[in-house]
Each structure stands twice: as structure tokens, then as C-alpha cells.
Length: 207
Image 1 (tube, helix red, strand yellow):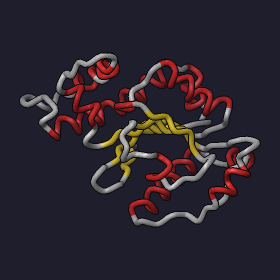
Image 2 (spheres, rainbow, N blue to C red):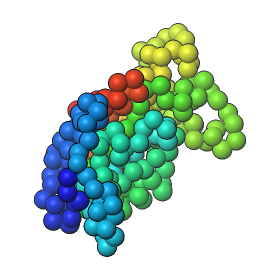
Image 3 (cartoon, rainbow, N blue to C red):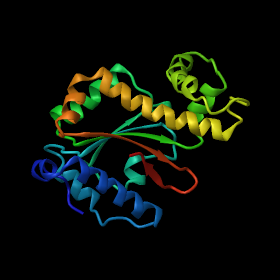
Image 4 (cartoon, rainbow, N blue to C red):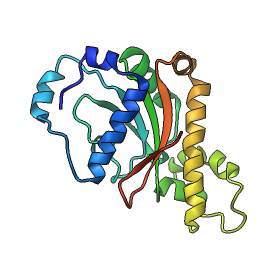
């Protein structure tokens, strides 16, 4: 498996980038790995990096984007924060990834059985975590399918909130970043969402 160069990165379309991740996840769940020489990639990326995607995911220890998408050094920008929430610094990082570093894709990746989502559903308050979990409240409010047991003990409710949160974060990226919204409108990038299943290892991308 080759290391991305400026040319290979620029030749990719946003759709190509999505397919690379889908193929990588397929290898992951089949317990296969692309043949890479990581030490060689260290040398090949020493003078520059040309990642094709930026992935916003949770800090959950089971969800390393490089592993679940079977990617190597220099392939993706990995942005991790509890609950895959958004803030100004993360938006700035995405703008750097796409506008300056040439990435073709932004993925907002939620996952099943998310502790941050469960905590928000349980209205947990603890130090600075309180402010982080408050960013998930809009997804809780928007979940109207569940009328009873609207807390972290209801796995369906938590999963619904998780999916809604992914879509709201995607909308917020477009709303808060004129740069990224314009790049997407011009077909230079795609902003997509997905859900990682911690039981199967599979990522389901949203249309």
C-alpha cells in the first residue's frame, strides 16, 4: 500500500475518499490488513503529509480511525473528542485539513454504546464534562420518537440520540464554517456521517 503524495491526494475525488474508507473498514471486519511498511511510511512522510480525509470521532478506546478503516501513516487527520462534538478549534482544524492540506473528505463518526451520549442522556454533571455534555442536549431534544424511559438505560433512545448528534454536527460544520460549506458546494470536499458498531466493527455511512 503506497503512501499518499500531493499528486495522489489531488487526483482523488471526495467520492473516492469515501470508497477508500469503506474498503478499509471491510478489510478490518474481515481481519485483513493492507500490506504496509510503516517505517518506510515514516520516512516517506518526513517532509510532508497529504491525508485524504479528516475524521471526527469519539475518544472511546475502541475506535481508532486508523485501525477501523485500515489506514497508514499520513492517510488521515484524526480528530478525537468525547461524543464527537464540535467546537471552534475543531472547526479550525477541519479548515486546515481541507483548505490548506488538501483533504477531500470530512467524516463525523459516532458509535454505538457511547459513554458521552449515555452521560448526556442521564444529565450527568461533573466539572468541565458538564459543558461538553451540554453540546449533546440539542440531539436529545430533537429525539421525539421516544416518549418514556428517555435516559441512558434505554439503548434505543441512546442510539437515536447518537445518530441525531452526528447529523447535527454535520449541519453545524456547514453553518459555522463558510470555508468548508463553500468547498462542499463546489464539489471539492464531502461532509458525511457514519456510525461505528462496537459489536461488529462495521461502519454504516449515512447517505
